[in-house]
Length: 442
Ligand SMILES: *Cc1c(COP(=O)(O)O)cnc(C)c1O
Image (cartoon, rainbow, N blue to C red; front, side, top):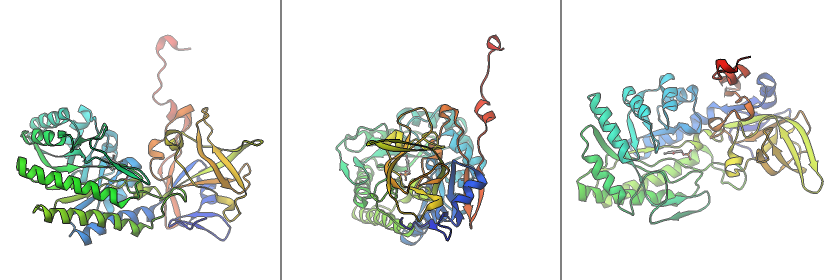
């Protein structure tokens, strides 16, 4: 096993997460269990924050993209680390506010924000809304006028760079439900439109080119295009871009097919973006914009591990060996959604050699309910504690109650000790909103 930043194998041959023994955690809290290493999360937030401080005179803000993992405790950590957050729904906004997160450092995204979400954002006086349609601009303007305020917005634009993990393509116009294309002129049109609104202050642009991206060049090309576009808007519309939000998308390690970047290594991505912003600002004789970035996955992804207990083992001779666990797509739907790859470890026998190729199956009534297919493990036995690594991002936040399975709790490890940050669900929770109409009652 590769030594991960947050993971170790201790003297008992057990996996350790942020200094806590995974086998003990499984005993103490039960499985399935999401475990987060607080130190790793803080380190990642700090790397991005300090890079803006040192390489860009602090003229910017890191926003944690909280859709990757949203609960009250993570907003507290982001606040303590002096960064902002972005939210993509009224529910995330509510959670952040409940946690006491300062509203002025909250940015709101979404391609179809609902009326009540816009109202809630304005009532809370959040820092900025990233607008993504004409009708949304109208609504923000009208709602802001009602409240006698001016709402700062950014426009989501599409630079025509589409990035994937190991490759990226540039397209003239991008087919996407997000943003307005630079290439086909719609980004310019909506800029002109936003500038006509009295109760909306257009501060600049936002772009986000994709997720799980390792290619620095794809981020840099996006910056080039947005900066060129901003220069054009300055000339054509006399609009000065004060703020530029470059989104998130930095890749993390899931398996050895991915690059493994230590937390400090992520500074390079940000430095490359900053370098291009500065180069282009100089070239076009523009002011350097207030810079925002929105990493989600890279902040929490490798900080998280999910622990399961191995149950049934089924071998289909000559075909496959299925190792079933007490979780599945209800706590991690990413394989079912994208055939995402993960690395498993037997946490109670972490030093043993991997001798078998197995597939890790969930307990849901769906053939596609898998967590990892054809992965190597030591010979697993019922009762073993299985850890799936790099599950901190888009696992808990995508969890569901399919088959009326209970969404597992989350614990946060701090200096070797774990505490709940999301408590376990109960059967009562699953029935909380159920209603039996009078005529159906027994
Ligand atoms: C999802 C998302 C992010 C975060 O992306 P990661 O790949 O998790 O870093 C940032 N900005 C926007 C607009 C997003 O939709």
